Length: 178
Image 1 (spheres, rainbow, N blue to C red):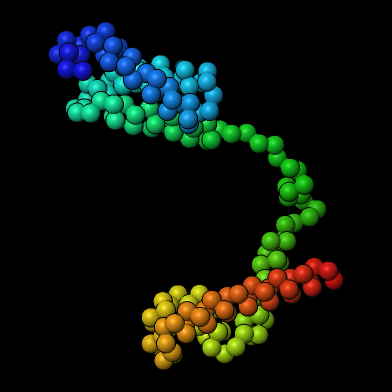
Image 2 (cartoon, rainbow, N blue to C red; image 1 turned 45 degrees about the vertical axis):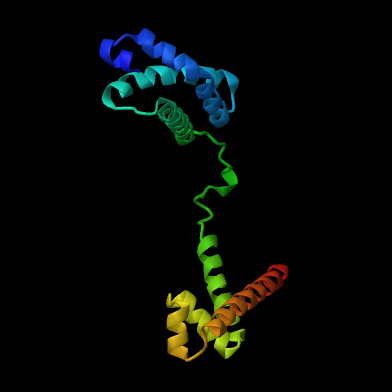
């Protein structure tokens, strides 16, 4: 690499790159999962590293080259995701005849169900769950505010969450079957 830096001859850089070409190809194959695409990007990485080597001082070429190859492949994959095409399901599109309030109505029903299920919890569980989830208090603050032991607070929150989930699932199934 020092010969390339001194003379600027690509043959020196090509000989160095040739030593690690299999590693670069392996990295490309690992991320791109296509042999032909991996071959193309192995060559593209050589072209990409020429200006990068002129800008950066590289002390450990093998590790640096691995990172360049990995970043190159990840950037290629990200660029492909930006333009991924999917078929649109027209049944989900809004039409003039049928405004989409389903999501709003469903959220409203979930809030009512949550309120109902919170009322079904034991006093301590309800208090701990409300302080933790609705008021964003930590276990320590809840323990201080309620005078309960830290482990009791943790237990009330875990049991309350489990009981809430059970109540929500049970009552959702009942309302769906009606």
